[in-house]
Image 1 (tube, rainbow, N blue to C red):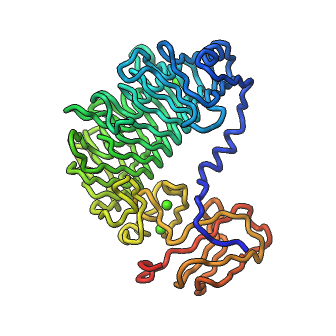
Image 2: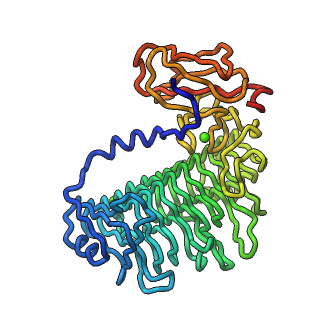
Image 3: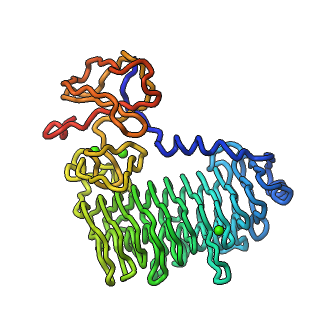
Length: 462
Ligand SMILES: [Ca+2]
Ligand SMILES: [Ca+2]
Ligand SMILES: [Ca+2]
């Protein structure tokens, strides 16, 4: 019998990504266990090679690891990022970078990179298709990841991906104000997804840069499914008169506590000189006194959509901007969330104003967890709430399911991976009974079973 239970859902996007990641297999893999072996392998690597680091600490002896061959991959052999630490000499030490990337299509994954003077990772200008996946970037004196700008180069840094990483300061605060998480100039079509940012904060009077910031003629950035906790500023596209064009900010959770000591708490999401952007399905909750969760600023910011966001602060027009602002909630309560103090802004059954009150927008099919959103029952904010969890499976006709939980009326629906409903049982189904999959044998190879949300009064006591 297949028992319905709490299951961590594999995201739709991950399923598709893993298929795409199969191509471009590396030409050669070199295994290293010391910083000297790493330096030699890096010097001798041919384009497309992989350098795999055994578990341990790799203390950089000068400058940083300069990557000059296209298509190289640096990764831990174990795949466990905490077990392989690439380290400088501290935030005031003489090691400037973790990785200095001066080549296209470089991948850095499953590593910890920390304790450097400038940046854990910096690219040269116009270096395309950088991928930073499942890394920890910690304790740099300036921004943790940097893409720079040069007035003499007219081709942007394109197609970068930063996914599944942790950006943080081990003290919970930076060493000086001129810092940030990801700081990208003149970048085009980057994706920043499924990352966690903690304590990107200034200890001085001036506010730090954002956890995620794209500006200086950047374009088309997608920022989704990130958690941003106690950072001075959350996500910024553009700054002042330095523009960003287009871009999507969606499914992010941004929390800022009321902190003791220095606290430059500022905005959660900022569009500045940023036309044609879309900001939707974000959750921003502040326990501090900053009045605005989302700001759109300056006259060049127009044709912008701000939809289905869940906040406890204002969505603020500033300095002559214009936007289509609709179907947001700006009076969210702490009791609606799983654990605001730790930045967990998943909603619970108290969030009745948010649950199923979202609108269809931009064909978004999933939430911050990768759980599906279905037209007609879309929640406002980053999290789609399910009274019961969802299970993906490949059902055969007659497969039995036992329902757990306390007795309440439920209906049950079956969806395919595209989110289309393929079967449903709408009669009263009581907990403890056994139901059978109603479809044909192996009719759908990747179907999902989903208990529909309980309606009305019942929804408060599932
Ligand atoms: Ca380029
Ligand atoms: Ca819903
Ligand atoms: Ca969810």
